[in-house]
Image (cartoon, rainbow, N blue to C red; front, side, top):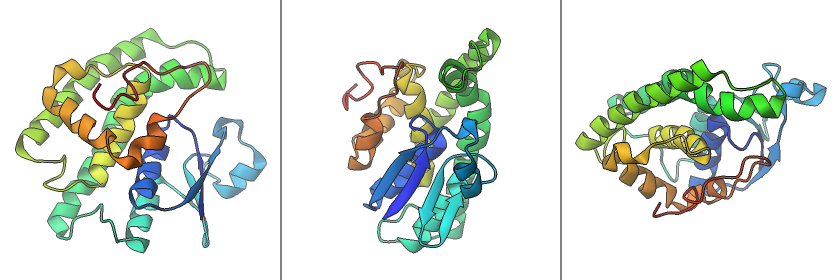
Length: 221
């Protein structure tokens, strides 16, 4: 059985959790206050970040590297396409959400509204929150454009790209920071992906001091 050191609302941890659940792999979830830089945790990952996955080989870090490792070790339920050009598109979009979307949106909304309070780092910076609220509109429009041409974000099958996007959006949806009225196409995509059994533990998350909105766990919004 795997053991995952994680933070419930971290999109990077959620991405790994979704892959583990989709592949029906047993995992023990261990919440980790990584910002306290506990010596045991720093030995597991000197970078001081989550997620960290404990395997028979030791401790693994970096969410995309973990996901691709799980894909290679457990290929039975594939989350990467067979053709190189299609795998490229998946990796491009995973990078888009974990880099561009994270820096422009997630870090400006989730990290300002939630993480600062959890870490005792003060109050949200209003300029950052406003910047994130503006930027998410562009990203939702880009997703709508992709989904107008494809069944899923990277093509005709659900892939790691969809889980990367859903991990970020689900974290933001927990704090009501996604305007689902902006695109019915994106809303339908999210309803479809959050109805999967792999999403159950994500929708059951409860963060003390931050109750989710009523629609968060509603599969029909």
